Length: 275
Ligand code: C2E
Ligand code: CA
Ligand code: CA
Ligand code: CA
Image 1 (cartoon, rainbow, N blue to C red):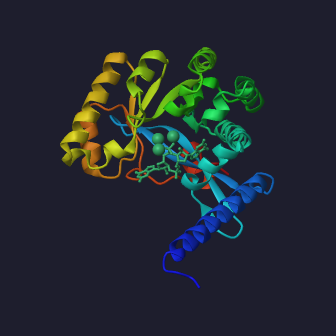
Image 2 (spheres, rainbow, N blue to C red):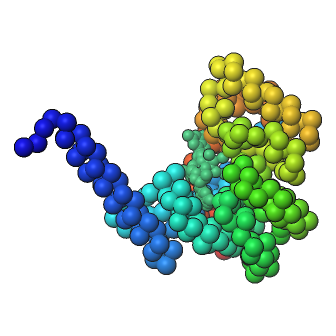
Image 3 (cartoon, rainbow, N blue to C red):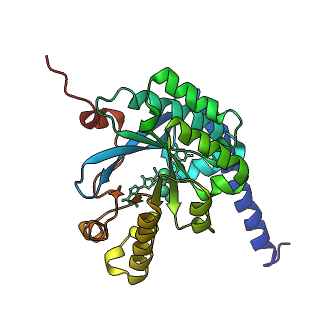
């Protein structure tokens, strides 16, 4: 007969089994998502704080799963990284983003997230150059967003790749600044063109003295190093006012707009067609 103490173990196993099955299903579905054309890109506005004029758009990946509906990148990007699928998915994102941006009438920049495994691929640089050549997008309009995690694996190699990208005219932004282990030393060693302050520091920055101090210091740092700073995740007018007063360069967040589908975004990026 079963004793009381057997039950938690039994429940635990079932729970683990369920989690593993869900994960395996996700991996299975993710493998097919590219060929089934289930991915879509959305675009979020980035603007200058001084004038509030648009300066570019960050490209964000969306997965329209056939039965589950939209699956968040917070859920599937980590799985794509674990399985290596992020390389093919990332290559698709980069190609589509360049293709789209090349069709805009206004020369806004397009910012693309690059996963650690993409950056260390020997073919990465060539892929980027092929994309620019094939789509006609000027390298000056492409910005790559990388995180600390992309750098720590092979710093020497990453540094070389970054210099080559920059020599082409491509800009590189440090994403999620402040959340890693060594954001400061990363800034010292790597030639970043932009610092993106993570949104965890921006939320309620106007009424949280700790966050305010961190954001102010980052802005001073950016100023001293001559690197523009973008604040991520601006959701309120109070946050916006704080950032403007502290001379933050640019911003992005729900206050200015949710990520937009291509059709909506074209109203901003393309001239109206007269007939
Ligand atoms: P991230 O690169 O830090 O992207 C910013 C995330 O913050 C996006 O979430 C965006 O929708 C969200 N966001 C923007 N403004 C606000 C705001 O005002 N408030 C709040 N609460 N959130 C805001 P999303 O699209 O769910 O993406 C999550 C993460 O998934 C991204 O974080 C990025 O790390 C990853 N990701 C998304 N697309 C790609 C991609 O194409 N490639 C790779 N490698 N990773 C991607
Ligand atoms: Ca990003
Ligand atoms: Ca970010
Ligand atoms: Ca983030």
